[in-house]
Length: 520
Image (cartoon, rainbow, N blue to C red):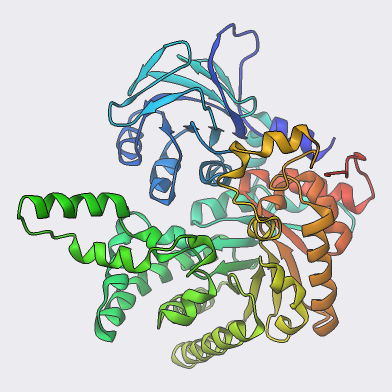
């Protein structure tokens, strides 16, 4: 059995023999079958999920929708493709997702959507979403659960070693941001966490605390906001390290642009215009000034990643302190924490040197204060072509590289993954510019060569450097074959894809492939 075949068995499916006509077709973005009541915003999804299964329906999702995505059984969007925000987050959460159902006319204000044949589906109506085929049905379709997942979930964590192939091979970690995801990943056989995204810890009710940090007008206000966030971050890390005790946990410091934690610019501008027209005070004026100050034409290539750590005084120091204090607490409790701190979006060795020097200073302070000297390694995510090309210089500071293949693919091809799949990718596939999306299966000729180069240059400077991948490709069977060939130590993927990745890693180790390596 191949990893691709196992993937088909890892998720619930609709019962065969069901003769229900689909009302829409979209991109099969995250496999599985989900049934629930339609809701059109994140807050409603959270509220209704307490008593019913819900399907979150949006034109497209954004970071504000994370709570809704967590609470929904499935996601349906009219825009986007397999690497859109909705698709990537849904796969990470194990949620069923259909994206790019362009025939749907979604009216969030009226709380309904219409299909191409005129069928109107209102909020509260039940739909069934098939993330494996991309089909959407009106009404409830019977769902059959996955016996494979039930088997894995029913095993004790200590049984995981029974599933390891008796050969030397690439290890499989999980992308996990919560204690619950960490617990599930370990049960499914993960050998650690390869990517813990701290930005997900700043959403929901904590968003106001980040607003305070952004709005701070002096050092005192900024330090107060950071001091409030510190114990919350520390508690998150304690829980995750407890679940993964004895296994490596790679924690990425804050990566996305800060504007993602602020209200929508258009909405704030509209509020300001209404207040001005009515000659009323505008309590959102301070927020609007901050949003305008942080606004960028291309934020994913702007003030994010390591640039935040360099410019926002104390932000990364707070996160490193929270990590170190959590590790110390686990060690005092008899645990065995193994923490790796990852600096994102490094493009030059000097960026990493500055941030790493500050981080080691904080780690030393916590070790002195706590009396616990738990091991920490500092490394970086290789997600820019320049980082791959200068990997030898970066390796002088980095103890490990984690290849962020999502952004590395974007920056190598010059593609925006949120836009291209629904625009010109169909033409590219028809004209055989490539035979599969480079966001699904790694582009060996371009991105792959950069990875191979970075591996060789990194090991030439630091022979024992840790090497892994934490992008979407970490769970793709064909890509795993390549990562084995270039000598990576591990891949990291969503918890639900861990068994698939483990199987494919084992097949790669014994030289078994499907002969489908051509991705051009």
